[in-house]
Length: 90
Image (cartoon, rainbow, N blue to C red; front, side):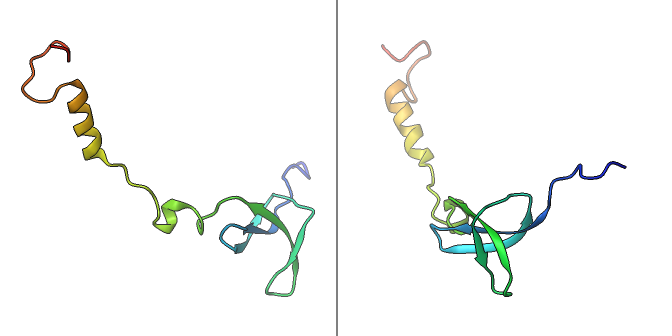
């Protein structure tokens, strides 16, 4: 088997600055910046723009689409019930 074919897989801290959240995991990502972690070791740190702590889906702040309003607006524009087939101008 050939040696050195796989990338270096090592502990890395990912930091979400928007949420003030960081977590330690293993990755092939590299960084010149380092951070001292709770266990006393120093690890490379990678800053990310969004994580599960700041993503609207996971935080419960996701927008919901007003589908009923869209349907009503469509029917108002293009003719709702009671109009015959064959176009909306009539």
